[in-house]
Picture 1: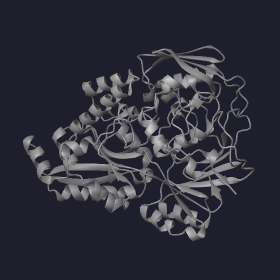
Picture 2: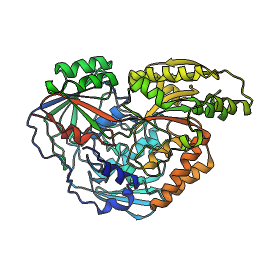
Picture 3: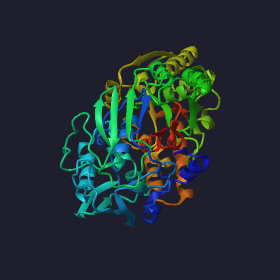
Picture 4: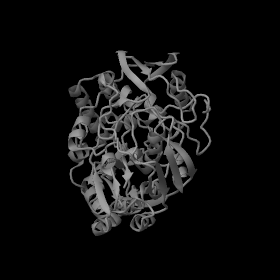
Length: 524
């Protein structure tokens, strides 16, 4: 589904699914009813999944697999920011702290195991119990307990009113796993996937390939434009570019360099198409506020005052991304360029004044960690340019460090890095998802940030269905982030896919979810 500007505007209202899900019917008007026959679509990418277990999966390539192989109670169709029933017939809030769902009868997992309310309860309880440090359990912070009074009814009891809970449940954090097949207190074996979604995983070789076939036990509304789907993982962008040129893959996403994309735009005569889509991914530097020198707010502010986003984007990304001056992506509710308002144009003189006022001796030694394997090879150019800018100011002396992705994410989760680069795509289409995971204590990136005013504002927007109240809270939260700088927003991405001749439907899935819906992509 292609997110239009109109659809993005709808997302800016907050998409308070909590107040509208019960009214949604089961008619998915965006479903693809084209018949794909037995065609196989091969998609290439450099972005590799971190985990296939929903309890530990919290990255784009992992959630892409989960989106296509698991059901949730509700789901976001391609082309829409309003959730529709998936495994549930309906969900509703009988009161602000209770969320009830009624399941569709007769559903099964891909191995024929019946899907009941017990499995839904198990899935949510399991995620919270495992609480994997790199997983999405933090999204369920509002959940207190879950009941399954009968085979078709699920009741969620919340700790406090939270209008975003319905949106969260419709995201991939709500993936339903079979209680009889998944361990309750630990992750499943690597490569094991058993869901009730439109596809089933038939082959998985880490860092190489994932193969999928249609799930003949699936009873949902999705119709597929293909018969099989394959994801081919490539070690670097040059190999991915070569694969799309020679036809080894049908579609290329996530991993092509700006230079690759520019070159491929010139090959339309060969039937190669470059498709641009709306993006909601953001990139930023994170500061562990308990680790020196990031524990000094003046140092963080001086870095914010020095970094020139536009120069970095020109140097590293050839204009294929947009500068970002706040945590909330452009196009979402309450977006305000808080960092631009506070710091203005980059200025080493102003940065020096900040450090001098705090009595900080210069140059300040900084170690910046980044990961080009997960975030793309161009990340190295990005951080090389940031290092150049900071070093050239005379206020900092920068050392760049990197390591492989698994070690990288474990290290920042354990608080080993003072400053590190990271990225984010929204879990659900609400501005809350750009502030709560970042600014609440024990946030997703483990930066040890704790500001009571920010915590109170997040509680305020969670408790209100009034867009005006929520937008005011989002604006204040962005001002707090610009003042304290636990994160330094750098840029907002655009989605780009490249297709071979005969491939259709890719434009339908380039949306703010940043997840690929296999079923809309067909091959003539």
